[in-house]
Amino acid sequence: MEFKIHNVYGEEKLSSIAKKYDTTPEEIKALNPQAKFIKLPFSSTVVGHGQQIKIPIPEKKVIQTQFYSDAPLNKFIFNSKARYRCEQINSTKVNNTLTSYVNQKTQYLLEQNLEEKYARTELEEFLYEVIPPALADSFELVKSTEFIKNKAYFQLSENGKIEKLLNRNAILKQWNEFKEKDFSKLPFIASLKDKETIKNIEQAGDKQFNNPNIQEYQRNLFNFLCFDQYLYKPIEELEKEEFFYASTLLPPLVIPLEFRYDKVRENKNMLTIKKIAEVKLSDKLIQELTAKYNEILKPAIKYSFTEYKLFFSCIIEFDTETKLLEKGSVSLKEEVADNIENTCEFSLTRLLNYTP
Image 1 (tube, rainbow, N blue to C red):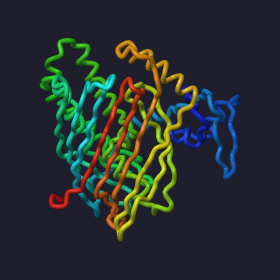
Image 2 (image 1 turned 135 degrees about the vertical axis):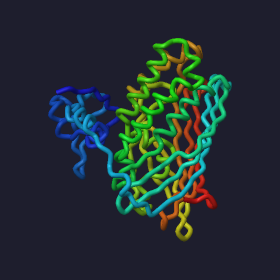
Image 3 (image 1 turned 30 degrees about the horizontal axis):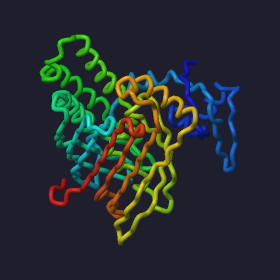
């Protein structure tokens, strides 16, 4: 059986690791007879800190990809709809000097049927401002792929999360049509002289659309706010949840987080919730962050690694009757203190006059 290696940071739940890799706790145990598994009260099992465990890769995944078919989309009936305007500002500072700035303004249509646990989103507008301006041409490619990717039908889980993409083939068809008709006409692509670079960009798109990663949809900040536990559970029953943040400063390292939900206020049918992440940094992960910093950032920044910090929080204003967000925001800041920082500020507002 083929397998991949998972590095255990802290003491991770065996069930969470299995869910992350779409396997079972029993299969992981069978493949790791020497690993240290700790049984806790209430039937939870955790994997001891600092271990490397093998994760089985089921062969059936390849077969499922080959024979995947879309759901009959014309049969979906949506009974809850809204439009939203969003703004996302990303910036990078090196030694406290701004080196890049991107302001994206988008408009989304959201349709859902929570009783049947499915939803649809469509990106309708995508505006942007980029500094330095030389990056603008490359953003035309980003814009094109975002329109293709974000015309999506989803199956939702019992926790309100995106569980499955239901129109995968339709999205792939749109990508192939774009690649054939418009890809080479984009100024950014036309400006590239190296055919190998163009081929690599095209192959990256093929990989993305042939094998879409559901986690990318879950981490889209519009989806991240709209699809969550509060669609199906009252505030008193919202549970802490694990989240794995893919570092933008030090890729491909992943930072384990745990979100908690706090009630800010409740007025009639309007509920405001704050969702705050607790960062879990083990000694081993800090060593890996330091090594990665020394490898990819220190040659340009010059200063040595200081301290890794990550702040991630959300505020959601939610209508408990319609199950629709009225407002929402995300604040995210990742930094190696005093050396480099990436920040992201995202907000969404429901449109009152321009409705479906």
